[in-house]
Image 1: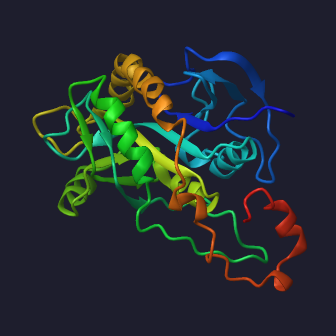
Image 2: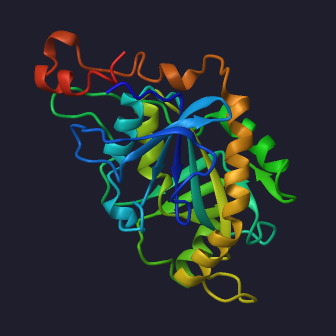
Image 3: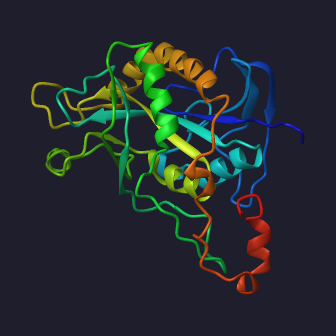
Length: 284
């Protein structure tokens, strides 16, 4: 397989394809962690080789808890991807973050319970830093691109990731606001942790679709509401993704790409040889 890509785009709810890609090929990547969510679409966008992956599969077949996140990130790494943009639908926990706004968060809080969140184990131990969970350089470029497309784009804020698939109770929504969280979704974890372990820059373009259920002046979130607003904003999301690609073309070095340096606690002679071979594309 000769397909290579520099940038990965993971499309969330409502974003199952990427118009404008040229020289397209569909690529199936076998990984030690099973099959990715779907075949990867590799093509040229704004002069850059890009790999597009619909997170939930075409037709939206996979629950957030069912997403093969390890296979998805591993497959992108295998294709040579060094930067990933995740497009995600989110709810707002703040009055100033309105439906149809774009948010590029800078912090992340994990409320998931059932998802494998590391490539390691089985004879190799690694502890990567997650103090800054999103790549600041890619996030900045994404916010600049977003501000050029939509009138309401916000930089910063905390994304709380819940297990799902059910939306929050009113009590949970109120507590998340009290804890200082800004947006709520179901997919940024474990993607962000796995991307860091894979030494990949990772940032989120969050599309606000609703006010969760805390806002008494608005209806509580429903799946129909989310999908309708994502569909309305799909054109903007795709325009932002096209606009940010040239800004990432000549990316300078980044600490994200050195995340495993000093993070592996297991001495080479003590490593499980089978695990080391399985993780070879990830290891420095």
